[in-house]
Length: 74
Image: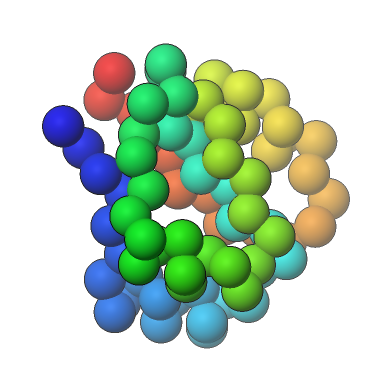
């Protein structure tokens, strides 16, 4: 099982980058769980969680600054 878990370095990266949007690709079947700690950090950003294949299509059209975290092992 894989769980989206943010570490201090992840939080610092998002703070430094200041993206307008954070995209999270939750795997082929959309089953990547997000921890409560990650949800708290992400609450400071517009966050989009979708299966990875859908996220890729969405970010191809994105005009705002963004960070994408993509689960690609399944």
